[in-house]
Length: 116
Image (cartoon, rainbow, N blue to C red):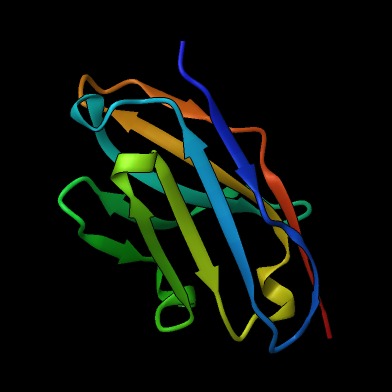
């Protein structure tokens, strides 16, 4: 059983930045992609960004141009750099690992609060 651990959340003022980190225990050869999701208070969990093992990246429209997903496959680490944060970015951020065989594993989440 692999592990997924997120860190880097915190409280920041609107316009500020945070860098989230996801550390996982899968070998790159067992990996399909790494995703970031967030769950705002009282809302459903929503997809934020994806990084493929080929280095490709994709984002939901609301974070395009502000968030960047990047990672070091050799160190099993994927980051989410979040700039120009807005109060609506507040929520718990989760990392999800998708394996080559279709299985998915989630971390426990790291909370982000953006004050206006």
